[in-house]
Image (cartoon, rainbow, N blue to C red):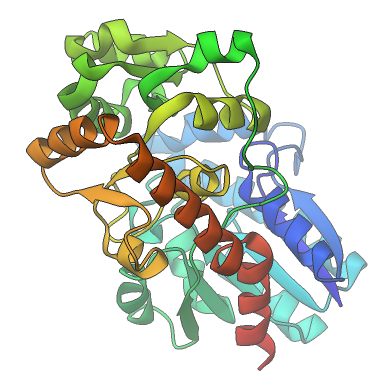
Length: 351
């Protein structure tokens, strides 16, 4: 089977992980990276993002951009003639383009809702385009009933997974131990100092004095101006690739699992990655964690007091940390790899 993936490969790991998973299943994969392509010389992706935030010109400019962008994506897909198309979120396509691809090629065209489309403020096309997709995959169970209200087509819960060939247990070097070694580790973008990053900081401040290190971009310095309790914990390293993340997972005694605040029930990608790498995880409670790790392989907290108490407990009980970490890795390998998620999607579409 030939599968086309449309997404922001230069911005996100999701597309690469899913492409690798489909290939591992034996399928041919072609890809269109919406962030590296310009539908016209005057439509730079950064310009579009800036223009989208200016209300008086936002809609007219975006209409022109989306029309040109949609035409180019449609041309690419029709040239490739895949048997199945899947998009990461809405990838700024208009509804009629999605429907025309489905009609002309007579193929299913799915979207993986890795983010809640009702909250995608800078992508106003996604929500009205949702009913045009033949299938909708929601990354968290809480999204399913909401999205079923918006489309007559099939909506299914398919959680994120882990690329087990990318994230796995390693033996850190002495230099990596020095850099990443800590009682509690965390890594994330600071989201330009926006509430997304501040939310994480307000949780992490509860354990800042227990030996916390936060790895991320320079925007964490902006956040520290508002949450000074974490200032000494911040390490401005920029983006950490898989090799660095594996070293962090192996060097931190506890890895803090705090997902994007828009997630209501979901398990974030990084929690699956950390589990695959053999880390002990202390995560904010989400109902999907109970589904994904039903035997408590990932420890959770519901209050800031519980977060601190459990961090202190597990720092003092290494054997329990190691048992849970090993069990979480086994659970991911047996139930939550991207290869398994890719097969689940195909089963839904072609059953």
